Image 1: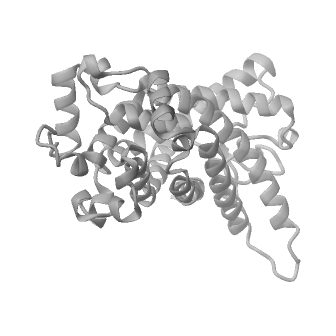
Image 2: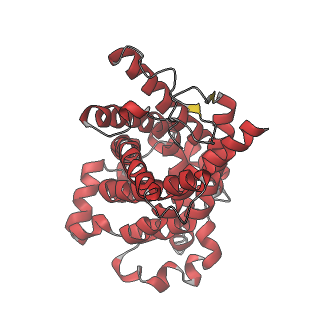
Length: 337
């Protein structure tokens, strides 16, 4: 999302177009899905399996489909990765400019989203680079808006993904329907259970997860990136690092740290969401978010709310470390073209 902050403000910057945002965000999002999906499959299985069958062998057993099954359901998130990232980038940028025009008299609006001459993308100007309380509030609020908007797209996508990820193990029951793929899964759910009660099952808990998550994500990313850049700049001058390597290393480390930190905070909501989106869809069997949470704690204890957190954090670092440098690299190539 952000690269180097240009010392000269916008003097050496060129504007990032919507098309460039779409292409760069789409490629970065696709790369993150490919890297992270196997970890996500393990996480969902750990969250939804019974305690007796949730061993390491159970997650990768033949009945679960083996290693290849870790890529089950990847089609849905991969096909929408470009759209999801485009929405995140566009909504965050738009809400930031709206904030600046409303509360800061447009002081920084002209530079937001501009591409610098060394391949970075300006998120914050030098005046606001240090994360004080006011700038944290702005970044958190605008990130939360972005999270809320994109939640309406990813809820049905993740519902389909979760169904496909667990159906191999669940198919041992004769009554369990096997879906042929993401399209068949989505159409079947809508046909049998409707759009909102079926495909958008778990929308409420998705909003509880995504809204604060992206607020923390963007706010902590700016903080970590600033500090990582400062550490890299303090390296021994006898071992110089090129400016592009500086920017991409800072983006990767800050993205990975902020992604893992955010997941650690909002993880219980993801456990509830996975349970809701893999439970029976019949109307009389559906339960609300807080009822599902209560049932999980009563049946398995409060530790179950953090089940699979380890693999999630392992997944979160590389996934989020890839997004930012890939996004900036693609923007740099598009700008040079």
